[in-house]
Length: 44
Image (cartoon, rainbow, N blue to C red; front, top):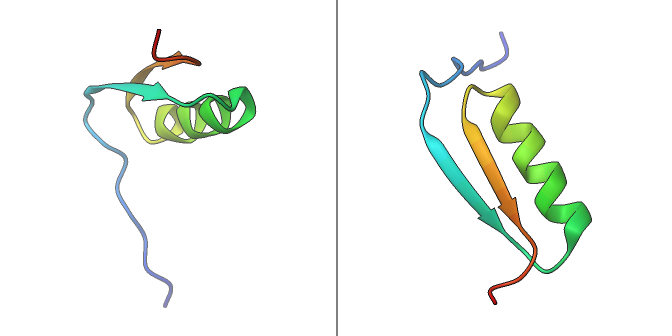
């Protein structure tokens, strides 16, 4: 039997990374798990 996780019931997450591909990938994974995400690529 493999472990499973339940999708989240929500929440908003800000993903910040100077690597656009990493930020985009993480944001998409979080969205697939039920989170609303916003991605930024710079701290400025």
